[in-house]
Image 1 (spheres, rainbow, N blue to C red):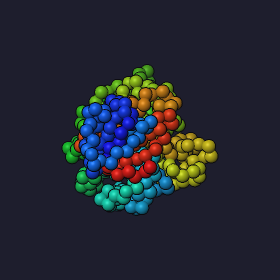
Image 2 (cartoon, rainbow, N blue to C red):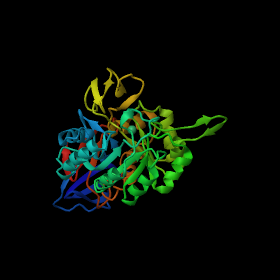
Image 3 (cartoon, protein in one colour):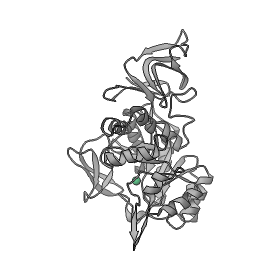
Image 4 (tube, rainbow, N blue to C red):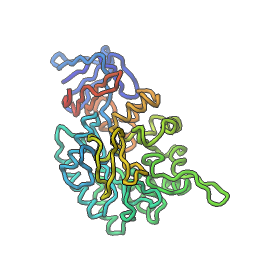
Length: 392
Ligand SMILES: [Zn+2]
């Protein structure tokens, strides 16, 4: 048994000043005040006074890091990316793939599965695959190459569904022909269906919700909004994401993709239990400025900038952030409370993906994934993953 004592514990739904987190093996055994938790005499007691204890971060939308991209299709690239995010306190993530030909994507899934089945101690735990593309809209493709965007045929759909044990989420454009049938099939197997890179109208998004779509990815980025067709205005996926209680959404809170005003708007309209922070990181995350490759195209991270641009520099090609930087951004710059920011980086994303029985909060029975943060800078001082001290 191992006991962390004297931290300000953010569970993250409540704050316990001078709290105790008791770990037994890889799980949390008890959380509470010093009066509530009895520490066994033989437990290793670690005094962490002055620090914040919170759950390890759960990044449900991250593509890459340290030069490795989950879509590269090699276990080493998968491990590079998983190591990069773990260094910054992301203890669990969904390995998010990008648009590619489907045969290549199925190979990529194989590489991710290999790492999931043989995890190393210095990596974020991969809890599943998030497939983003190629079932996306041409009009809202962002950095996804247009020539790759298409829907699966019947045989490919069956191949995809065979990955259900590892596939946690599929992002698609619900207005595409055949999308509703694909939503039916995915939802029936318990795979979370998210809308994104979509040009759909509000009504098309609602129709997809009725078929089982529950989440939308990176609000405002690659997403339809109010448009005028002749005299009439039509709302889009942005408005549906913000208004519909049946949808959760996420923001890339790196400080580049969205201005503070829009981050505040999403936070006010959705609240911390329906809005997740995501990094949407690409391979330059963890490296410096330079020229990088994304889906066969060149992109740039310029000197003094902490974001990647497409070759023409007219669009972003993903962030270079981590969830830790997103938390720091929304707390220190946007003015969102720490308790809500931590919730949006742990419990909320875990719940969106149905992973909250395992991770996302400091509660008895869950995996002992704990971060110790400096309360002033919000830098990570120590990381405990699965009950083991892995940093600090
Ligand atoms: Zn995207």
